[in-house]
Amino acid sequence: MLSIRKIGRIGRTYRHLNRYSQILGVLFAYGFGEVIDMLRIDSLIDLGMRAASPRRKEKIEKLGRAERVRLALEELGPTYVKLGQLLSTRPDLIPADFIRELSKLQDNATPFDYKEALAILEKELSAPIDTIFDTIDPQPIAAASIAQVYQATLKDGDRVAIKIQRPGIRRIIEIDLEIMLHLATLMERHVEEVAFFRPVKLVEEFARVLEKEIDFTMEAANMERVSRNFLGDPTVYLPTVYKAFSTAAVLVMELVEGIKISEIERIEAAGLDKKLLTVRGADVCLKQIFEHGFFHADPHPGNLQVLQDNVICMLDLGMVGTLDQKTREDFIELVDSVVLRQEARTARSILKLTDWEEEPQMRIFERDVADFMANHLYRPLKEIRIGKLFQDVLILAFRYRLRIPADIFLMLKALATVEGVAQRLDPDFDMISHAAPYIRKIRFRKMAPGRMAAEALYLVEQGFGFIKQMPQDVLEIAKMIRLQRLTLNLRIEHLEKILSANDQSSNRIAFSILIAGLVIGSALIVISQTPPLVFGISLIGFIGFITAVILGIWLLAAIIRKGRL
Image (tube, rainbow, N blue to C red; front, side, top):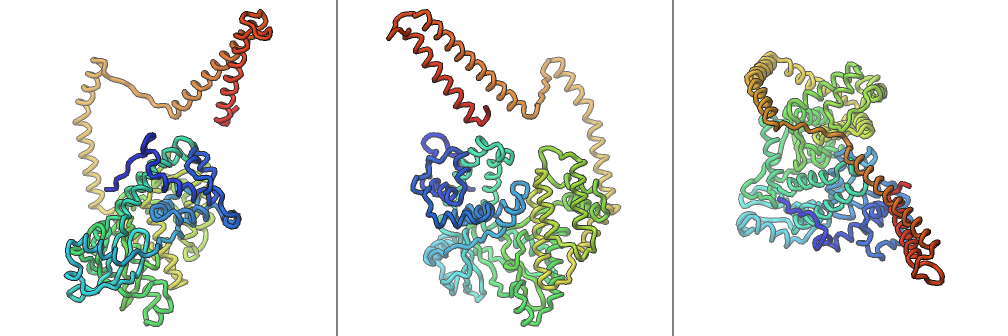
């Protein structure tokens, strides 16, 4: 597990001072100085780092805020690139323009030394390399922030790809996560607008995602699971994983040399059928989502290759999504309500699929849902584009602070990505019409007699259990009342904030009365010329006046600092 310690106030607060200063310096350089000021940690930035070159400053000022965020994350390195990629799957946290920009984050990096790769490989496999591999090409075929990939040949002649984790990457991630957790804590404390989104919880979720990504045994398990799901389907292929030579930091799999599904000219030159590839590619995506409930969450053209006989090959299953049966059925209910043009039912279905702190005002929400449907759905199906529809769904969700669960978002994003690939292969392809049979199948499965009988039996069992347990529960409650052990806890939303504000106001009033009393008392002492006198003025009264002035300035500064006079 990743070892992430919360940064404390004393001793360890700035344990990673150099890295902390570097992160804040990059934020300042890209025009986010106000964030540093709000967090009250600007003392960590060396004054020299604030003086960005005028040319760079002028160049950055021309960029949009979303683009500056992306560039800053890329400059900060692997952990922050991964954070940006996670945020690009959270439309409940950031607006659509940031989603689009962060989706462009490239996970590319400078290759690390081949000798280091061999050392890691030998350590992980606990055996001399030449006893396992016949040859290894010293030039990596890909280099990313977490790992890089080499071509090799096993002793038995099989050609493989070796994915090797970067040296020290776990320690780098742990340091960045500790700093990230500290920044998130400060945000919750000082920035009310951000506190709503619970940044500490987000960092903890991010740590769990990264833990899975840097454990290559998880990717191997994903590949094997998807491979089993398509067992017996000759139109889909997944590379074989060599489990005997794979560990948490090394993944050895079959080397597949196909054609990227976006390389149209090469596909045509190879004599492959573009329309058939379009249908098969769409089927691969739809089967995973609606039949298996376990899908490739990043099916961009680099992860989809075409083999001979128009076979679709999937690569890089580090990011996957899972949809249980109920979620799939709730999604189908949403689709059904949209197709039938039922705005109120559509609004309720959206709320059922999302998480929210406070239910929107339904009349206004239904009106906006109706506008959304009018913009997209009152036209022929072949003219509806999932990608554009998806973007507008994100805008609607963000406006009403609805949290789209990560797996639902990944499903929508996967559908939009596959539709984009399909449009390049066959511009006349209609993704929505092609998905209709899968949707009907789930609807009929829900109404199947066997399923309904099983659900009815479950409800009867639950009802009998409730009836059997109820008398015992009533007796237990009566006993607690008799022994005066029953307590009632009421929680009023935002009560703590109201009480805190009242306490603050009371303290300020009491402080003001104290200052006023000090001024009046000092004035009486000065008028009565109470000794000792200095230049004819009572020293005690003078000290009283000075004290009142200091306390008054202190009170005024406290009020201004809070931003409310």
